[in-house]
Image (cartoon, rainbow, N blue to C red):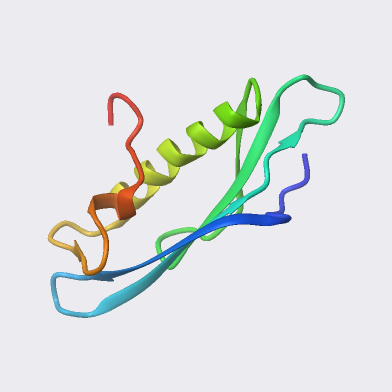
Length: 104
């Protein structure tokens, strides 16, 4: 699997106000799901910019819809774990509106 975002199909931006008053501008980019070479399943590339590691990450699902669903949950987890305690989103709901995976 190539480790790059490819065609961006969705983007969300938000501003995180840190406890000391500084702000971080966060951007989530979601790439078009692609079928894994020689496999039946799909992967969905995504990137969270402005928090923690900014690597392009890949989530695999049994089809393109599941890959997107799983990516949304992992994005929510990354945002929750990367935002310092006491931070607040200025222009969006908790975790920029991304769901958390079960058990998070």
